[in-house]
Image 1 (tube, rainbow, N blue to C red):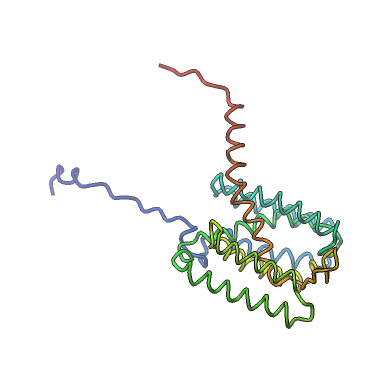
Image 2: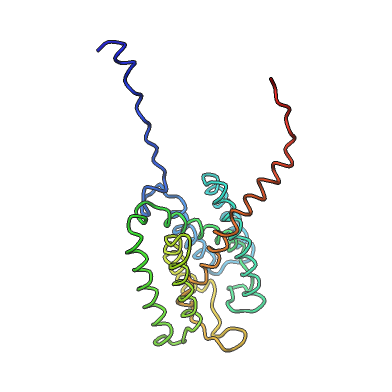
Length: 262
């Protein structure tokens, strides 16, 4: 083959494989692996621990969240910031103040706020995977059926009639029907249900039998907890772009204008 023919051949197009496209079960999907391993480990290590050990676990969780966010886009970082702030406000209002649910030491453990960021990243990583996108219809249908069975059990057959769980299941149906990213809520259903069952089973937190009004009964945990968590996801999807735009404008105003060179 002549040198002219070699030069005329088109250069090979590099194939870039993004980790989030390798599937939910891929070991190259750090948010899924870290959340499903680290969060249960933290809950296990927290059993019987004191306040300073909780704070150490909180530092470790913050460091992991920061490491995972380094590989994410600015928009995802903004969304996680929204989730952490929104979820923290809910935690401090509904746990120590209203006692809708109570943590083991009566506080909000230091690992909980960054833990919400990990949960959102995990649900997002599951929801954006190519594997799930190819099966969106069946995955949504399975979520509706499994969530409905769980909510029905909680409402009619559990030892504690779970009215709140049934209401949150209706919220989940709304997110799946009209949400911008249905697969995000599928991921949230898997992760939140798993962690709620684990956290209450190990005694990290416990839900009250009723809401503060005494009118709404609550399961331990509520069967439709993922539907309640969906409001955090909705806040991230709606407010994340606005937060990113505001941060970009602020950064632009603080950056001194450079004179153009000729």
